[in-house]
Amino acid sequence: MELELALEELSDKTLDIHKVQNIYELFTNDKVLESKVAMNLSMKTSVYDKTLGFSETMVKLLEKLAFSESMEARWAVAKNPHTPVKTLEFLANDSINLVRALVATNPNTPKEILTKFFNDEKIVRDGLSGNPNTPLKYLNLLADDNDKMVRLRVCENPSTSKEILTKLSNDTQPDVKIASTKRLEKESV
Image (cartoon, rainbow, N blue to C red):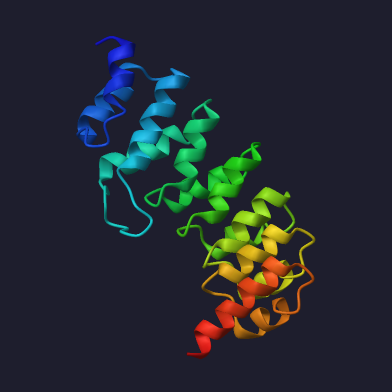
């Protein structure tokens, strides 16, 4: 099989997972192909339906792709809802902030890993502020973050407490004020 044909086939999210695995094995260590494989795996999943696309084959591919030299492959693995915790732990130390940020947003990332992101770069804190597994203690601290987008994501986080939302309803930024007030109104209904 030619690389071009393999890349084209990988754009099809309905491509059988075993065919994806075969393509990966044929062209291992090709950064472009690894990115396409990781993207194909992402297209097969859903954050809303945790069972969609799950297979042991997918998990094995995600574990291998976490070591790719392709940043795109690693960030696709970091955000995939089927990525195992052990792999998320590994990617939590990635040198690329976007990879760490996507680990911070992944709903499978355990609290122990999430807490280490509290002092990371803004993009990573932004991911952390929206993760429903982020401990309340950190959501409270992130509600005081200098960055408006971090505070806004805290407002949108389903785990944010009424007390934190009340504090954010007095924010100096109108967007944050509005978002927190809407959440408070919604929760009081």
